[in-house]
Image 1: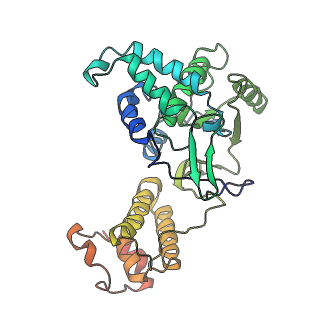
Image 2: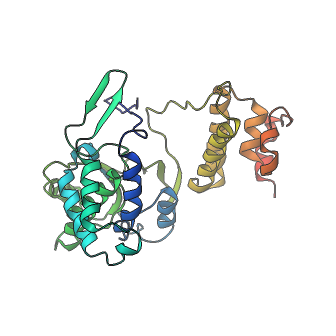
Image 3: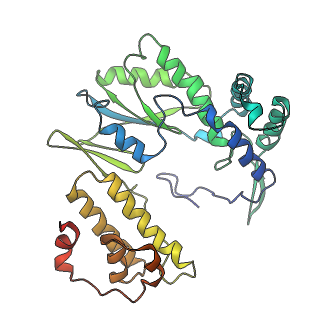
Length: 327
């Protein structure tokens, strides 16, 4: 189950073994180049950080993020398939990636996207509308709809085109607004007229900060800074130290979050604050202090990674900042 604010539980089911899942993954590999070729596309948080370092969003306005309400259940699948079919029609290199005809590919795509269902301990359920969350083709169909039915219309609109320059990952979008809040409300109303089922909510920068994806954007002394963002519903629960999970997976969780801190945190102070938070969190998840400290604050040769447990002395806490920032 997944926590959502004001809607505390959402069913998350593993569909990786469901009929058609492997086929859908293969189809996605054939179609993945049909999206992501616009100036609005960002692959991940690192892409967004790189854009923030440019002058693209430094025009003196306020920052705004918006996302769709229940994107995947709101997607009209035949609509996405119609756009996909058009993309295939103009893909003159498709025959170099598969021996199947466009008609055969379309029939297979319709087969794996129609009447999605999932099974859980309560029984077998069919999703009555939209694309299944986590389905291999769901993200592709969503991007096709958003790029062609939203972004294309905004870009060519005489009023909103010059004003709105957003970046987007799935339905999470971010832009800078240099006009009045009244005009922003007008744009929000326009955005919600572009599709019968996909509706958007806006969040405006407040107290010199705004979250986007898992990044918190801060204005400090008229400078844009970034750090890691956690939702209010975040539990800070990770694989427990006593779990029977593979040792490599346990250490990977810590190292991944350390890498995230190094990418997202724009100053040494923000980075130190985030790493100290992780040190506390993983101790609360049962990990020995010396082990977490070593993974967060030192370079570890890959070949010694599996021998970390019980081999590293616990460094003095009072020397933490010197240890991390020593030249």
